Image (cartoon, rainbow, N blue to C red; front, side, top):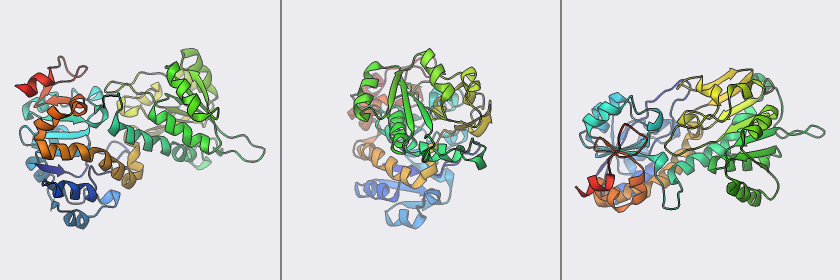
Length: 373
């Protein structure tokens, strides 16, 4: 199988993608397993991986974006391909990417059908126990980045209120409210509490709150995410972290514009649900470009590709997670890999241009039946 690794060209506002889908180490594993890899020149440059490293790993480095897309059996990307990129694929090719089709299906529907693309979304690959292994890695990184981002936003120079997250002798630390107690919410809470912040986690699941209570041993305050509690906690937050996830679906609005209006000026909102539409109403008003902006006197961070801020670490982590799937495709082919692995079948949005996931498009076909046929 020939794997293609193009340079990421998606630039949305200030959200240029600096990760690359495979590190040279990942390329070497595929080549040693008998696969071929074609990498676009400078694909890994922003993450610190030079062309020569890919050549040494056994990849063919080419200078044309179209050559990578037009020859690969399976294109491995970070961001979803644009309509122009989809048109350049060979018929029947597969593409693995963060597609997020719940918020972008209409723009690619027709061309995907014509190109007979098999679209596998990292964000919906799901193990038998319900874990989302590839998305989990990105969520861990985003959660651990949260204090770095919030600390900069709260600085006077950034237009923030000018407070230290950690506080100082005689000065209390920041109040951090995390809405959503999943992977990202947990790692964000752990990072903030490690700095000494007063951290609150809200979640709709009492069972999950009980687990978080045990994990944090009282170092973090938990509360049920009722509308009343969300309204109450949001208004005193110095930092509000939106970490709401409905896998493969548009995120629900949990924090309204009226709630944001009640926050104190110069505080910060980090809406990490933005790649799925955003769980804070004021980030949705920004539109799909996202970025860092001020609304209702509050600084907003709404960046759909947050792990790109640490592109090298994020590329290594991503490669480690997706490599077993790629090796499976190398051994068994695209169809064989899908037949053999239920987690990959759950990660399929479309098979040869036909929708196979409910909630995307008008009607979903049965993937198992299509693979058998």
